[in-house]
Structures are given as structure tokens and as C-alpha cells.
Image (cartoon, rainbow, N blue to C red; front, side, top):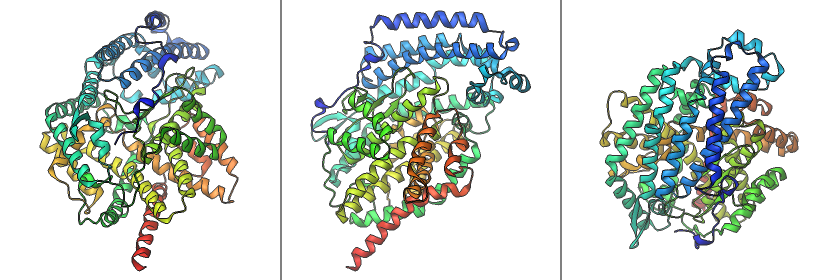
Length: 603
């Protein structure tokens, strides 16, 4: 069921960037970027080896200015396309912008390549100058790629071919998914409406919606399988050229996290599948009066759930108040998004599915995309994305090159914001039955974030490993999907064959391979972090001190790694017990639900 009146929900206003697709400022900025990039190349190409520390600092600052202007143009194109994915003119504009910016960036490519050819001792000596020292985080993260860097000629080809390679396949996927429609109750609707109906309290409606999703994805199976196989092979080729040890290694380097830390997370969650998902879904099957759950029952509301629509204005108040109670500074930041046209809210045809917060440049502001249906989970999504937005605003003070946070830490503020909002709602609820339903809903959200995302990661790992030996058939992709779903969700489920195609609508597999574990990383991290906050709030330290440390962590952006950021809270992601702490929070909620279940049966 969609929101009662989508026409009243706000759309974002991109005029803070450009007035529209035909704004003359776009052509002027593109021309300026082209000229500046060419001049930059003429001045600095081949000159970095002999440049002093202050000269290198000047070069980085100039590089940042050009990159930031290009980032503004690229963000406008991406946001315009996300809001109108099925519009041909917007699609052409987005593709044209990608091609133009890629061509301009080719004039800048030499810069990072030459920097990485500087010897360690030589660079360390120049970093002793204060002008260059401020760029230490940028150079530290750049040097991570040094062992995997190819020749300038090969790097140039990879950049220039990307617009007709991965980027084109991504666009094809987006346009295909945005155009897919289903038949529900005699109406033609976007695919997202059927996915949303999988949360309906009416089991027959869920079954019909699931069948429509399977039918439509199945009808497009040939194309979706081709996209997946092609992109997996494309990644394998580049990984081989760069000599990455595993398919996941490039993502881990981008996240500034060690392979071993990620594997420790995956192993910890995998070992806890039975303690978490298996146990919870067995409870849920009983609550629904079912011997076995079908895949369309996974997100079913619990019996007695009113499933009421939450008006948009109420959602804004709930989220703003939760952030403000924690810290008025954060409340003010999330309020900016609500008080300005920085959020695109309604679920409308031709719009990208899901939700995101998109940073632009430090001198502007991020934008948030939602598909708000008025459910409680949509309120949590709003809290999540506004956490990202606040994080991006705080980190902007680090500048364009050093504000971006690795994905493993990028989920911190968003998941923490969800927890703040949930706890505020839970504390205010006095009805035991409603409280239990809220707690169960939170458990489901956490399982979706931790268990489901790690299962997604395991699916990707198997697909990319097997793709090295040849294309995967639709049947084999379905088998892998079913295997990881059975392992992760447990014996309470009986998966029908039509579920085998559901892997194909997950956009992360296409746009950002192995991105998904960052959600689990962030959730477990936040669970541990929230435990510290609760401990201090209960008298074991000052909460104001926690809030100051928390905001300082967000303000750091990409200037610090996870070890530095977590140390002030007494947390260490390299400690195997760290992940257990995060998983114990989920298990504790399930313990409470089981205890309530036993109490109800004894009455």
C-alpha cells in the first residue's frame, strides 16, 4: 500500500546545484574543468618527483579544486537520473555527463599515479613540511593502492573504457529495473509496489506480490544474468591485472579495512546464524500459526500489528526529536534536510528504488532519496538516511578529498540514528503487546542488516569465485542463492523455486560488489558503540563526553582509520570479541522475546 497522497510529499530541489539540465552554468563549468585539467597536466605532469613539500601541497590543493567542481557536476547528473530514471532526456544527459567527466579526468590521472611512484623515504621527508603534512590522510589512503597500480597507459585505458564498460552495464540495469511493472489488483504498478506488498498483513496479497516479482524478474532473467556475468568477468579481469589476492580485496582496500577483519566479521555472523536468525524465525512461524515460512512471509507483520500509516509530518517529528534528545547539535543538522527541499520523498514511477544519502561538495549539502510508503520501517529508513546526511555535513569540514568516509564507517551515524529513533519509540510505548511487536520489528531490521547482508556477501563471494571458471547459468545462480538463504535463515523456511531469481534485483551486486558487508560491519559496530553510550548514561561516565567524542568521530570524515576512531570508546575491531558484543545485542532482544513467549504460554 502506498502513502495516502504521494502528490503532497516533497520532491528535492536541485537548483542549489544547477537550475536544470539546460542551465548554461553546466556548460561553463564543464569548459572550466576541461581548461583547468589541461593546464594542471601541463604544469605538474612529470614534475612531482622534483617538487618540494610546499609545492606538492599546492598541487594537491589545485587538484582538489578541480575534482570538487567535477564532483558537483557529476552529483547533479546522478541525482537528476535517480529522480527520473525512465526519462530519456535525463538518461542522455547523465550518460553524456559521465562521458565528458571521464574524458576530463583522464588529464588528471597522471597525478595520483606519479605520487604513488615516489619512494617511501622520499615522500616521508617531504611530509615533514607543515604544508604537505595536512594532506597526510589523503596520501596515506592513496598509497594503499600503490602495490596494485598498473602502468600509466593501462590505467588510462581502464578509465577511458569505463564509460562503455561497467558504467554502461550499470545504466542498463538501472533503466531496466526502473521500467519493470507488475499487475496488482487489476492495476499496472512499479516493481517496488510489489516488493513493498511483501510486508502486507494479508498473506494472500504477499503471495500474489511475490509471484509477480518472480514473474517479472523471470521474464527479464536472460538480461539480468548477462549483466551479472559480464560485470563479474570485468572485475575478475581487472583484479587479475592488479594482482589482488581475492575478489573482495579491492573493496576492502577502498574501505581501509584489512581482509582478516572482514573475514572475522563474516565468520562470527555465520557461526551465529542459528543463535540469531534460525531462533527468531522459528518464533515468528509460531506467531503466524505456520509450520513453515515461505519467502513471502519473511517480512510479514506480526499478528495484531495495526500496520497504520504514519504521515510524513509525524515521521519528521519522530526522527528530529530522537536526534535532538541525544544531542541538539545533531537535531539541528537533520532538521536542515526537513526544513529545506533536500529530500525526495514519494514512491513514484520512474524513480530509483530504495533510499540513499548522496554527498555533493563541502560548499553545498547532501541530498536524500526515499520511497516513503508510510510504514514504521520507512520512518527507520528516514532516520538512517538522515544519519548519513548529518555525517556528511559534519565531515565536509575536512575538504573534498578527505571528507569521504570508508563504507565500513559510513554506516555508523545512520545505524546509530536508527537505534536512537527506535529506543525513543520503545521507551514511549506502554502497551506490552505493542512493545513486543516493536521489539520483534527491530530484531527483523537487525537481522536484515547483519544476517541477510552477510548472506548477500557470501552469495557474491561464491558467484565471483565460480565466474573465474566460466559463465554461471541462471540455474546455478539460483542454486547459490538458495543455498545461502537456507543456511542463513534456517529450517523455519521452505523456499519455493520461484525465489531463486530474487538475487537479480539487488542493486549492490551491480553497482558496488561486496559493498553489503559494510552494513553488518556498521550495525555490529554501532551495537557495541551504543552499549558504551548506555553504560555512560547509566552513571559510568558523562554522556556529554560521549556525545562530544561521537561528533568528533563523525567530523573526522576520512582522516582517521577505524582503530583511531574507536579507541576513544575503548573498542577494537581487530578483537574477535568485538563482533560478539554486537551480535549479543541482537541475541539479547531475541532472549527477551522468547521469555515473553514462555510467559504468555504459562498464563
